[in-house]
Amino acid sequence: MRLRQPYELSIAVRYLRTRTSHSFISFISAVSMIGIALAVAVLIVVLSVMNGFESELKARILGMASDASISGYEAPLQDWQDLRTRVLARDGITAAAPYVEGQAMAVHGEALVGVGVRGVDPELERTVSNIATVTKRGDIAALTPGSFKVVIGSRLATALGVDIGDEIVLVLAEGFATPVGVMPRQRSFTVAGVFDAGMYEYDRGLVFVSFADAARLYHTDGRATGLRLAIRDVYNAHDVATTMAKELVNELGVNFYVDDWTRLHYTYFRSIQLQKNIMFVILSLVIAVAAFNIVSTLMMVVRDKRGDIAILRSIGSTPRSIMTLFASQGTAIGVIGTLLGVVLAVLVCWQLGNVVKLLEAWLHIDLLSADVYFLSDLPTQLRPLEVAEICGMGIVLAVAATFYPALSAARQPPAEALRYE
Image (cartoon, rainbow, N blue to C red; front, side, top):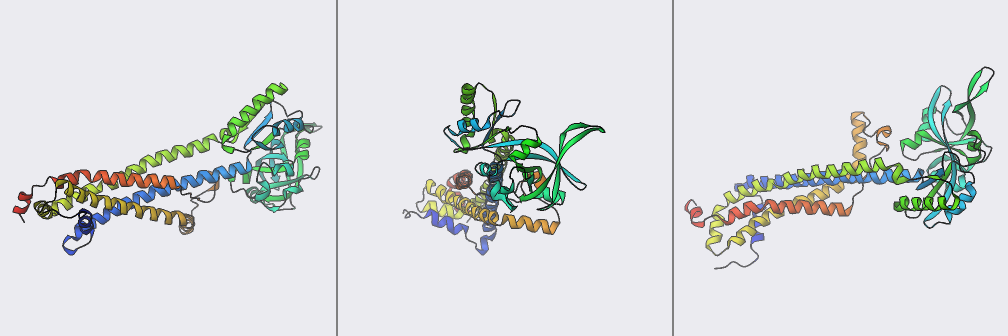
């Protein structure tokens, strides 16, 4: 007598159901599912948080920093207008804006903060950064030549205790001789705008002034420190900028410094990638441990179902069918657990920001300090390919864990099992 196919899957599903006499076996199966679900969910959530952090950091860095920049070698650019025209003639360069850059101390009353000063042309700066869109109060267009106005970050405004219309003093490290000694150079500026880039490094440590005012403040005689560039393919910024610099050196016979965002912020993104790889390996081991709990579960099922196995063998089931039966049960545990883990991960990623805020309110602590983590919130980004890889890994490990118990069930001697039934 041969049983009609496929009967193995229906029996495997029946073994997963809870029955009073076998509730312990079903409980262990449920625990195995939950273990895999939690391991898969944790791995997906952790990688999604790191993906979100990387993506958000990259967006905010590229929003305020340039895709690439070209600056003078040991001196400001002599003729930045001609250089800008030559740069814009290159393939891949979509915009270029001059800037004057320096360091200063921002002072208001008794508060003082070290800042970077960037002199810009408002209209050209809009083409290479998002300063216009992140300026929440005031307008960067107010930075006209001779106005001596400044646009500052929101955290700097809080630290100095100033708002639009207030005055701050920028004190330079350079000094000039007076009858009473060397005095630092300084200049009063009126706050014309406050921006919020969402990144602590910029919101507290960067101020914008007019290009002409910065050139006067730092005595560059109208020359630019360099040009900030926007590149069509931002992920190819290094090659485009390097090739452009070599061509300009050959044309003009003048050396330039060339930087791009991948070089300036290499350590940030390299450290994130390294941490992602480490966390993936560690949490993959957690999934492996959870998946191989199926081994103990199925071994208990095999021991409990020896009589069923003997009966099936006696009515025509082959060892291969018995292996398929228990492999199907273990695979079902792995698939169901993995799918539950994906659903749980999606729900957690969806509400993770609110959960963090709730924990901060309950515990009265700052879990995401902006001066430590650069960002003040916790972004997440689910990547379908990563989720698919994690699901595939969980299912493969679950299937691998069924091999030994299924083989053990197939080798059960029917006569020996029926003797004790």
